[in-house]
Amino acid sequence: MNRWISPELFSAFEAQQTSAHRLFTGPNVWVERLGRDILISFKTDAARDDALCGLREWETQTGFQSDRVFSRFLPKQNAERVAPVLMEGSPNAPLQTVVSEGGVRYEIDFGAGYSHGLFIDQRANRAFLRERAPKRLLNTFAYTCSFSVVAALAGAQTVSVDLSKKSLDRGRKNFELNELPLESHRFFADDVLDVLPRLERRGEKFDAIILDPPTFSRGNRGRRWQVEEQMEKLLVAAIELAAPNALILLSTNCTKLNRRSLEVMARFVVKTARRGCEMHSEPPLPDFPPAEGAQTLWLHLR
Image (cartoon, rainbow, N blue to C red; front, side):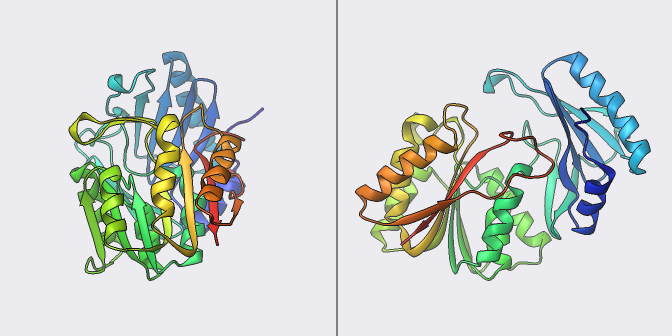
């Protein structure tokens, strides 16, 4: 089975002004196209080398010519994560580049660490959020603020929260790339579990809330975050900030939490909060195999 995307799908991405997407998924490896650059994420050297050979065949079929090829080892432990390594292309070219997704621009930085700056498996959820055009968005664990950018493009005021000031600075850069003024947008470099109660005490309400936490991290004062243990607590706090008819996105890459477990948890929390809701997930992405990427669920509160 050919797991490289077809020339027709590649042409469709070009027509949609989307230059950040998956090219190939195989055992122990996947390949992303990021503008004119390629990133091979791999678990074994053999899988990486096979993917590189497959890339050359795919480029011949499509006429696409990459400028650089990076590779990134996928370790079992987060502490072992390292930045991508340049395999092919000019070592003197800037490690920062710009990609587009439906015409929205995002900066990619291959030198910033393990993650380059854009989770491409959230493409459909970003498009859905922009289409729904909320008036006020709360983006928790915001990273480089891609959800905040699309909401702002639709006219929303946004609040982006992330423990990393560097990530939020990259988020501000994404606002600038899309010619968005920062006046109606707030950025908090703080622990989400500390910020949400403060927002509640101020009486703030939001029409859309993004909950896309890491699987594991350390927060303020060394607080341990484990998503399967604390996702429910996070949703409870978020519902207190949700306006009538608000949207909440639940998202996780934790293998212990699939879509079904997210749904069971959400129904319990929503019922306890005496709110009603409907649930849906966006259709699978055409460049991702089934069940690959983040598990996501939208809640439509009443």
